[in-house]
Amino acid sequence: LDPWLRDTKPSQRGHGRGRGGGRGRGGGGGAGRGDEFSSSASLNRLLRLGPRPAQSAILDVLLPDLARWAGNPRSATAVLSGLAKRGLWDVSANVIQCMREFNVKVNIFHLSSAISACEKKGQWSVALSILRDMADDMVLPNEFSYSAAISACAKGSQCDAALRLLGEMSEEGAAPDEISYNAAVSACEKAG
Image (cartoon, rainbow, N blue to C red; front, side, top):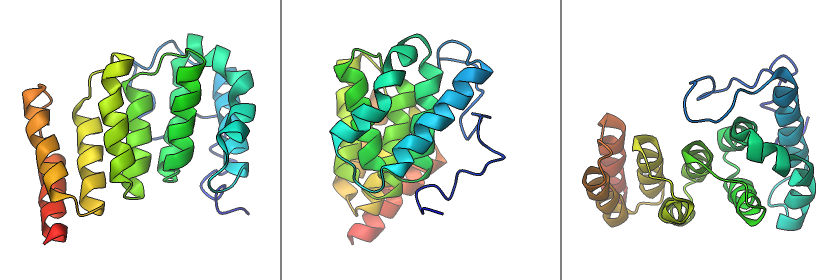
């Protein structure tokens, strides 16, 4: 089994309820069972591209889905969450880019999933770029997106960036929590 596919078990395909699924708010429209299977199929096609696929290959996989995602953002959330679980930050960032290019509105769940993928692999500069670009998408960062970005900074030993985000978080009305404080402390410990 391909290492990119190892976390996709046949018993999980089509259930679309990974971490963060089923919250019932802000994900956009109810996903029907067909959409769940389609999201799983889209994720599996992306995973089969292997590590670091070209954006053109990602677009080829996503093209049939982009119009559907415009009306059902939860399908995109399911795909991006699956990529995040595997730490596929580059694929996540390219999926977001494809969505933007085809005028598919991205939301906080999409962007937070991409930041989480960056966090898993310590790609702090990409995580910060996604966080900064949220304003262009008219999306306000929340506690989860800030905490994931701070954790990415911790993995990259970026104390100053983590502390700036922690301060910005409070200024923007996103309440820092134990996770964000611990991540900032970790960033400073690793930086020395």
